[in-house]
Length: 295
Image 1: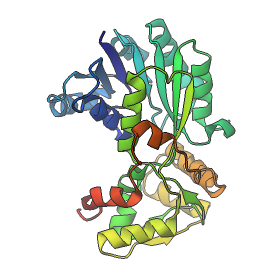
Image 2: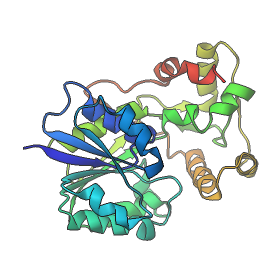
Image 3: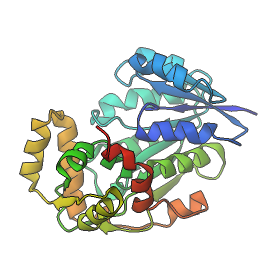
């Protein structure tokens, strides 16, 4: 029996990798994917994903409930990703979770946050509670910091200023590659036995940002320095760059938690689910090297 999986946020770093993992040969023979994106991105992704077997892009927006029914039609499983700008769980996610249950969805795989069970003030905690109470099967992927944040959010400071401007102090972070998250998500969406489970997804090493800068320096051929700004200086810098307040505050909160050690945990869950070691930060920098070398 073929099942249809709805992937929210399919135009982003993680959602895209879930789509690719589901579509990659040999691919799961029992699943097709409905990939949700903002309507403005739809024409672009219809063309980009045309060669991918079993993938159908569909317009969707958490802020437009009228898009829910079309996106959920015939869907049995959902990959749920919180867009960074949406922080109010009951306002922005409860209506969709209720619509998913009414549509007959059996399992929701939610991309959550490492250590979230001890952080009731972050949106992911509240979304997890909504899913636990929903009556649907749930699986939580509690991921550490994405490596790909370094070629998106922090790309220009590395490329132009040759520095990492991050308020993490001397703390360590067990970065994980979004490609590995996508592979894990594809597995738990297409095989039984993962409902009611919370997995902590990290890399196999916890690095401080001086070590991260050293890896970048060795791989890029120029010196990258770790600048450890105060939280206030970081917030000012983000606002000067035009980063929205909501996203700036979420980043400030996450880096504050990082300073307290919440991102340093190294878990075996990713390796067990991938059946191989997670990618290292050095592998990631090698693979994405051109992102910091081109204009």
